[in-house]
Image (cartoon, rainbow, N blue to C red):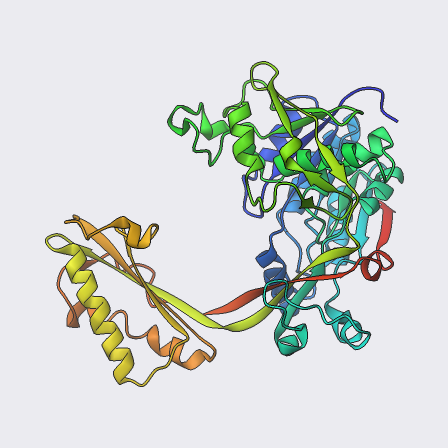
Length: 457
């Protein structure tokens, strides 16, 4: 059990975040753990499709070169790296990490921990047959109504398997669909020896994880508060949780980095994806966000304390993605004079042509970017803009009408209203629609199938 504070650094807030952030977190100051969050609901379906095309894919490939670069530092300084980058192909990710560790000269020094069991795609038929209908949390429909179109299905798992991998001295730990917050509070449980019923301390860890999970969003990025005066966003520092055994912690960042950490900035991150603030549910505990106390602890230091929590629920959330048709979107830019009126006329012409072709869509949506795309009717009457982008999108269950729509945008250039410019990227691309199906499942159906493997590089 640690007798000192531990420092848990956030290095990625999503797949596509700054590639140099992890190295800066490791090399610009002291840390004990580096957490890298890669997964969102839609990411799982993308990874599943990649795996279906190539059995060696299905994980966040950016993660492996990051680990290869940082592993010598991590081994030398005792830093543990924890990530959900494994996606839907933990085996391939493990093998790539082992090869990367050897290439980094860390054979015999680094240990790779892999946690499997969250992926239930191959178990869906059996689960439904045994009385787990996995109804949609929003509509109540049973999963059977879309089962033949399901692309991915993953349960959100908690901290226990990560803690086990830490206990077994894994240098790098990779999971599938771990809840984002567990990547931060699992090290706290491990370091401080918190029991499973220490709900207030676990709730504090959940809050710490919620602050850490979105990377620089907690240190001044994507922040509405005094955004114009935010210092040096080009070299923004990512957040670090400085955690104590009693559950209190400080949010900070490395000295000399950009951004800002203040109570106001941290509050803005706390509101991210917030439902009922009294019940922020995770697999390990339920946190009451109304009990959070924030105090200024000095420059770029915010102390968090007072968090209360309660026992976990008897179910885990399952994130399911299924095929729900096709979509495409095309754009044209119209310029002054009468830019908006020209774009509106082009929209009418396009819709009339689609109607005369007998094409049927589930939805046709038009936006006038620069006027009402973000705020809709709240944008007010059309102003006399110097330019406006017409954006038309369609969706349909079948591919054919969407494909034909993509051929009807470009003709507007010469056979529609005047003054078109900005037709970039060529013909719009037809894309498959992946819809989200949230469900709950008895937790024992997942936890009884979790497996922790720790392999020497």
